[in-house]
Image (cartoon, rainbow, N blue to C red; front, side, top):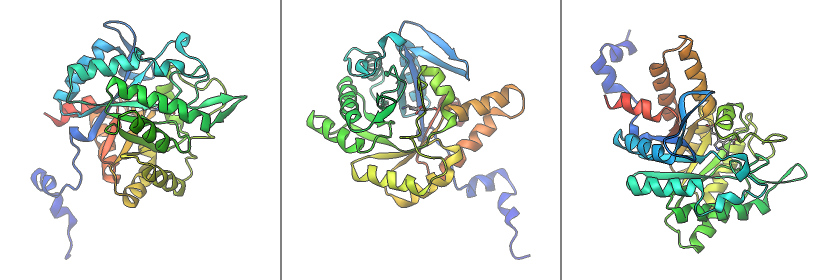
Length: 323
Ligand code: PBG
């Protein structure tokens, strides 16, 4: 035999030497759900060991994550029904929950990168990412609402706005609004290829943000399509995105690879709530080992081409990596 691939696997040190993909804490972004109150920590039923946190605890989480080498947080506000309306009015409140959270985190941990989501759903009484009129999701009238939301987040001090709504043309619209308001340094992480996925279920539980009627299939992508992902990504690159994202991650590794090969921007992937729930549920039953299966999953997402991974496992994996 001329070729014996097993020689390169014969010891821990050789395996370490030839390993092609290495996960680092700096690859990870920790999403967090913010609630009102003080010292509030409420577990999300479909996301064991993951909590909605009040701002004071979000600040503690930011410190701990940053200390472990996680460079960024993605913040999502969980609002009560009373503060939701069809126009997502609360999203531009300068003293809104998200805006206060951004200010507090930047004050306590100025070095950490804060990412804020731009979409109507956490604020919308319809639970959709765009404006609803007679059951239809309107594209162009939504753009001004998104732009206002992005500017409000920038005023609060966010570093990166992350439009997750999948309306057409929003990256350009948001870029122009940010620039016109003096925020040319605020970056845009575009949820470019975001699929209409069943794996968002636990996230919608966390924010109580499920659509009140219909589904998101007229704006989020059909899971069957890959070509279309490139169309979306290229559009966002041309409109000024700084980082593009594929979401979900695990069932879309081919899309991550295709996107990474097609463009010259950093690519993020969102290891979504359902992917977290699958591992947690089977670990609870004793059917999977949580740490090794999580490492394998995140390494695979990076191997496919993701430069950055949003994951609810960011803190626990950073802890393992730093030991
Ligand atoms: C909404 C948004 C969603 C997620 C991030 N931003 C859900 C949705 O589109 O319904 C999902 C994240 C996850 O499942 O972890 N704009």
